[in-house]
Image (cartoon, rainbow, N blue to C red; front, side, top):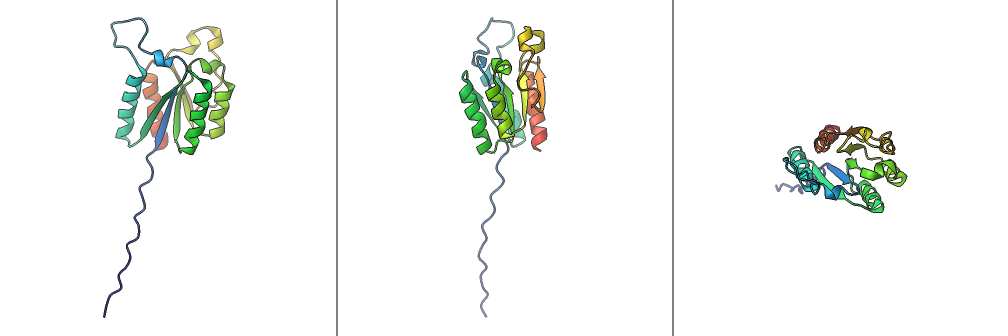
Length: 161
């Protein structure tokens, strides 16, 4: 009597790694180029490296994108929906107070997001007190410097678990 051989079923691939997209608006590429201080300069690459290392410990991929151009930020938000990004951290910079189009893109894709600002926008000029994003954000972090990005990442990681 011969035994029939069972065919090996294909193993299901592991689920894709969760992803967080970090968006930086205009002029944030200039971080670290300001007035020298006794403190080491904060740069976008330094912020990204710290976020990437922290997220990796949870098996999450962090991608960072900076642009001085509103349309490129909108395009990146729309692409994030197709890429199944699970969370967005955004520092819209000056677009905070002006970009209905970027707000609309975030609302349209439906990806939860946290709005981050390095400085306290409420301690600046009155026109900076209004944000087009805050009422749709899962949270707003303002005035904590580079640590604000890490706080937003911790929140995102908790939401992705």
